[in-house]
Image (cartoon, rainbow, N blue to C red):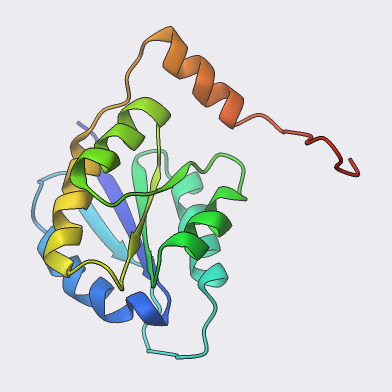
Length: 158
């Protein structure tokens, strides 16, 4: 099994949770490496967009990786990450929903609510996400291929 990396990132509302989550994940698997992409300092005026782009970009550069993003609700980081082609970010609230997102939809970024979950609750959700394996049935592969296509929406100017 190749080594895989979890890239962690948060905005100010997920800052403390990220710091608490990291040691809970370190050493849980011999092939796991945790890379904390920040921020290093708490900045109450930071924007969730910046860390979502940083983590999503790192995931795209390393096929054996996942991203974990934490903000207040998890909505903002999820929306921003999903704007990047090839990223399939989900906002999971239970270990089961995290596993399903990975298995059925090949999610590669997990977004978590710093306002809603403790680090211990997040740990359970992250571990379920990381241990799930994408289903290989043709229908799941087909659906994921459609997610990764460029889309033109009705009424768009493209």
